Length: 164
Image 1 (tube, helix red, strand yellow):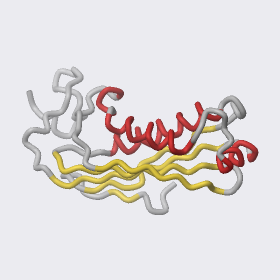
Image 2 (cartoon, helix red, strand yellow):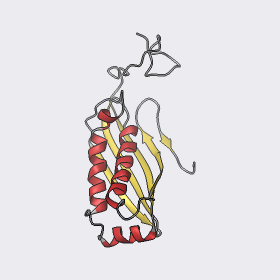
Image 3 (cartoon, one colour):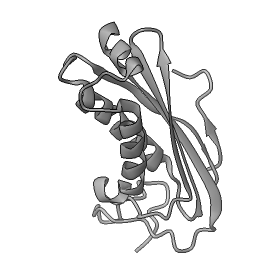
């Protein structure tokens, strides 16, 4: 089976889906950062700030969910390699009176990148915020989940910078 040079790496020469063989790749330090937003009513964010959401500590629970999700990305996204992550961090910023910004950072030394793990961490943290707050605000919106940075590996560095 060839590496399908110039084509899609998850599709072989006969068009069949396959998991990429990373066995021959060099292990390098790899880092990915992602971000996302949960938009809500001002009253909902005020309740998160005050710790009065009935289900409990919203951001602490969302942080744990995001970390757990990063570790289970290969179970969620077909063809992702299971990875022994060395670091998963989730941070939150309460922006204005309507937004929770989520930022994740994932790293390891290995043969494949951690972009999907960083994006999954943000996504599941956002979904957890929604789940914990939906009783008071079903109109919340999850938005702008995106890769901010990746480094390490053959494809080099990516920084979103001022791109939208």
